Image (cartoon, rainbow, N blue to C red):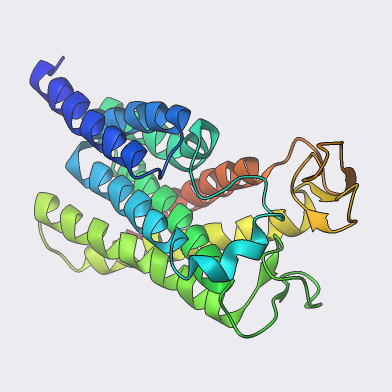
Length: 273
């Protein structure tokens, strides 16, 4: 066991977790989960994988505060606020941790590609959500094209699609640069960039499709308004499930989209690179 590497992973991620907690970017449980996920990714996946995690978490935290006042009315729609808890951390970082362990155990590049795609997908979805809700155009269902209330899962806008592509491409660019530094520069890196970017964007699309079909949606028992919350905002009475399955929360959707996009992208990498 690389004791020095383990100690570095513990110290760096301990500092990062404490910093995130002080900035109120995460809950106490989120800080603990973030520490564990970050330390594991750095130890198993190396610096490239860890930088991708930090870029995802950092950019998503910044974007959550972008024109925050314009997003205040969405608080009654979403089950959780901008502070990430342990479930959200694991939903967005768990796949990267597992793939990092696969990379450490086998040295197979497809695992490292899967790490990159998992964070590209998480970043694409977050950028689409945080920036897309600021669109002047009303969102439409990704499946039917019918208008939806702003912030509704499964709703998309041109601005959101653009933000999704940009968020995925940023992770892909950083990963490709780091991968090139460690393996050497070659024309194949263009394919790596394309696979990671495409995989991340694909993950965001999957997220929207699952959000429009399987993700739980409720009618508030007090106001009748559409919400993702199980309990009413006023008296905490159970809301009425109107679509999807109660077990399929936004965190479940995020995790599934990361898994599917990473698997598809890794397979594509094997075939094309």
